[in-house]
Image (cartoon, rainbow over all chains, first blue to last red; front, side, top):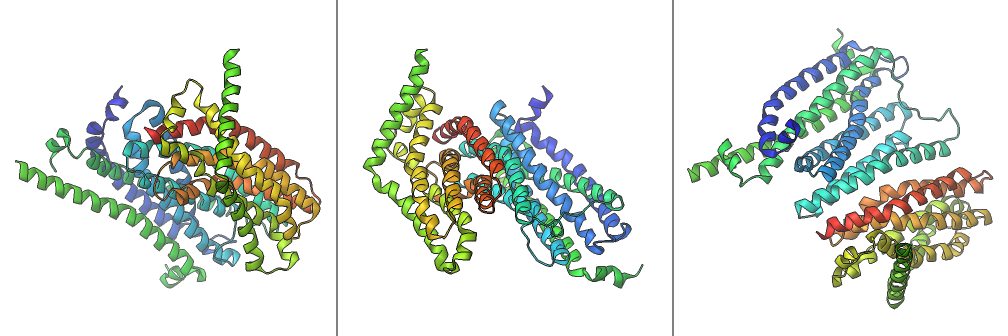
Length: 241
Length: 53
Length: 228
C-alpha cells in the first residue's frame, strides 16, 4: 500500500529529494574508503604486481553493468504487468549509468590486459560478453530515442529489455564456449584475475561504493525526468524551487 | 611512504592511474551532466513561478 | 475441436496469401539473395584468393552474410500491412495473433531463409570448403535461418515505422543473433576437423524450438505496442 503511494511521481519526487543527500554522502565516504584501501593498504599481487589495483575499478564496474541491466529488466517486467509509470522513469534514468559502467569495465579491462597479455584488446570471453552487453545497452537507448511517443518508447523498451535479459545467459554461454573452442591450449587460457583474500575487502568496499553511486545518480536523474514529465502539473508548481 | 614508488606503480603507472582517471571521468560525467540538467530545470521553474505570481 | 482446425486453416490461409504476395513482389525476394552472394564475394576480394585462407574463414563469412541478408529482408515482414492499414486488422481477428504472425514468419523464411540454404553449396564451393563443411553449412543454415526469421520478427515489430529503421533493427537484433552465429560456425568448424557437432546442433535445435514457441507471441505484443 505504502509502496504504491510512493510509486506516484508526486510523492516519489520529494522522497527522492530527501534520500539523495544521504545516499550521495554515503557514496562519497564509501568510495573514499575503498580508494584508500585499494591504493594504500592492499599489497601488490605476487603475480600481477601493482596492476591488481585496476581490479578495484574493473570488477565493480563489470558487476554493476550486469546488475543494472538485470534491475532494469526487473523494473520492465513490473512496469508491464502492474503498469507503474515510475518504472519507466527508473529504466530511462538507469540506462546511461549502466552503459557507463559497461564502457568503464571494457576500458579498464583493456588497460589491465595490455601489461598482462601484451595486447590492448583480446577476444577474451568476459570482455567479449561485456562488449555485447554494451551493444544491448546502446540498442536499448537508441530504440528509446527513436520513438517519439513516450508510452510506446517505454513499452517497446521494456519488451526489448526482457528479450535481452533472457538472451543474456545464452549469449554469455555461447561466448564462453566460443572462447574455449578457439583457444584449446590451457596455457593460453586468458583467465580473468583471481581474487585473493588480500584484495577482497577493498573490492567489496568499492562494490558497495559503486552501488551507492548508482542509487544516488538514479535518484537524481529520476527527479529530472519527473520534472520533465510533470512540467504542467499543479503539485509541481506548488513545490517551487 | 615512498611517494615516487607509489606514483610509479611498479612501472605500470600508465595503466593503473589511467584506469583511475577514466573512472573519475566516467563517474564525474555521470554526476555533472544530470546535475547541470537539474539546475537548469530548477531555474526554469523559478522563472515560471515569478512570471505567474 | 473446431477451433483447432480453425488455427491450422487460418495459418494455411495466411501463409498462402503471403506466398502469393511474395511471388508478385519477386524482386523483394531476390534482393537479399543477391546481397548474400555479393557480400560473400567481397571477402576473397578483400582477403585474397588463397584457398587455404578462404577455407578457414568460410563458415564465418557465409554465416555473417546470412545474418545481414536476413536483416535486410525483415522490413518486408510488416511494412506492406503497415502502409495499407491492415496490420491492425491482423490483431483484431478472432484467431490468436500469434498464429497469423507465425504464418507471416513462415512465409518470410520460405522466401528468404530457404533460398539461402539452397544457394549455399555454390558459395561454399567458391570458398573452397570441404564436402563435410559444405554439408554442415547447409544443415546449420537450415536450422538457423528460421531462428533468424523468428527473432528478427520481434525486432521488426518493435521498430515498426521508425525512422532509421533498418540500421536500428540491426543494432537491436545482431547481439541476439550471436549465439546462433557461434554455434552454427562452431558446428561447421568442428566437423571439418573431424570432431562431432552433436552439441552445437542440439543447442541450435533447442534454440529453434524455444523461439518457435515464444517469438510469435512476443511479436504480437510488440506489434500491439507499436500500433497503439
